Length: 277
Image: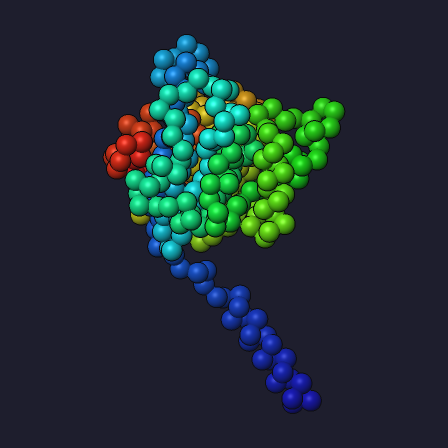
């Protein structure tokens, strides 16, 4: 009887220790905005549809805690080069070399959604673990191609590539909203730019930075509180934008997916690269 009581107490004590165990410590990350091209004659603005500022093609680097994390992979395959008339287009890998990073140095790749200008370059990074929302992959591997499905901007080859990488154990499926995938990095859904598009928060020395992906194309969507030009659910998109405002340490730290002004907002490190924090 005494042994049974002692064993039970030991189990309770062990469980209590686990319950009180602190989260893994991490150092604040650095975040870089990387512009790999421009679509000069194309505006995503509702307020200024004839804007001459053009559309910025962007990826984002998160660096710290022994990891080099890329948010989105850009595009470079020839079949996409004629979709937009672009200028200053370079492979994202060429920009990364300006930060002394080779493709094999990228440890993780967070894909915000399945549109080709965000996912096409996944094959450039041979060692990266690819993070994507489970529902985003499931939908675009199945229902998107059925009658009534939403597949605008999605290339079937990218779906096939993600499935192939998954069979190799290189895909991490994020299961839903507000998931911390690494210490100090969280993914949020709800913007509905695509079926399960996501945006990302990063903890830096000056607070939380929000990488909005295409849940908000431009600053104006954040400032004015209007739904994105492309969304499957405007009300959901508005809620996502409102949450971005609450999560960010400062309005300037909400970084839309295609905002040219981001490159003037922060210090330039190298051509096409600014350091957010």
